[in-house]
Length: 448
Image (cartoon, rainbow, N blue to C red; front, side, top):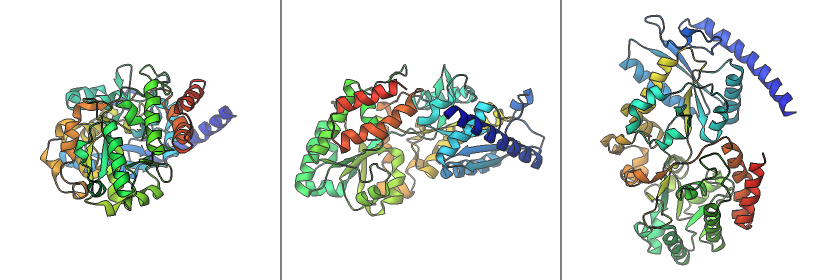
């Protein structure tokens, strides 16, 4: 049934995209449209003099498209001899990933550039990737980049994606609540300290110290990555039920049992109910990646000036205090007829100093180019410094060498889905035995 459905979808998509390709190629001679041939000229990256090279981009995030559009305008000012015409196309999350996968598998209709979310990326590296290696633009800058954020998009020594951010996990404290409890967040060094402080906050204010997700992975994943553990091993094997992960989930469950933490309203930290709960001072802290700052500024306006950012507690003194979480890799497809100029533009937009600074200014992300983290431009006034203060990157610099990577493999989509769908809910919401639940879920993924 699944094969039949896939074949039907494939034929339909191929037909639709072929028609799309024809209509685009008729409109502008210099445009890059979904490729129909693999001729040598397909990678030349040049176009007739004076005519812009069209770069087609697919994403599921409108802000990403707007970012590239703005960078294209800057590119054209810097490179009047190599102008580009940028076309961003935004699709719903699942539609984007399905449409791109079909286009790459059929060899017809792929864009020049596309975003692939990290938990989906392994699907595009199976077999011979139909993505262009990016080593030629990454390796010249690799000493300035957080390498672990490149490795998650690599296979057999070739880099296939470039992320928007490091996604360094930090902890956001509501200082107003901590002050009422007489707790100094800078004295919280370990997760044991965190639990002790949480008891004090609960006793003094009646407010839980934190929230734990029951339907997403962001409460669990950074905590196990801190300990060099993961959902998968480096060889791609399922390690969800190892001892470190059981210990971590037992710790989180105990926080809930002792009412130091509550399950996140709505199930996860992106639910509307959750934003409302936190905006009213529902809990004293939350650990999430740096990219979560935008959720505060956009959905929790009443906490402006009350939230401070600190490194996560370590599991033991001197242990790692952060892990790189989440991400979206931008890729260049093998079908692109203008690979060279597309790669040059991608390098400018994400790997250059100017691009890294613009990623912070426009998107509020911690850029993977870490040598800009001390740049005065990152302290300039914007909505994030207004909300959190101007020492955001001071905190990030203190954990610069402690940001642990995660392992991405072919079973990443399956294990993430199982954690979200089953494991977190049974352990955090139903308070079932963590060891038993993780073993059952891990075996389920192993048998797929």
